[in-house]
Length: 127
Image (cartoon, rainbow, N blue to C red):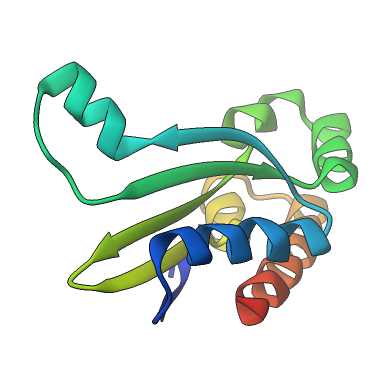
């Protein structure tokens, strides 16, 4: 699977806060944030559910992979999506093992991706 996903019974704002804090506890910072609902309204004049894409990064891991292959920056940061639908909030993070092994056949990168996945799993478990 390319994702690590869970559904929770919190408000969108509570889920957002818990997500940011849980990833922060695992060493990830939020580098980018895209408010899809607002963007669709502004650019397309259409309504959409609350949906935010966070670009998260763990600097020590990013440094390791970029030292190994600068082109890996094309795959960074890791995305975490939070959306509200049918009175429920879903949080979904990219599975770095699936992403990196599908695109880069390199044992060192696979090992780092596994470590990142473990951190993502811990963050998701804390939400």
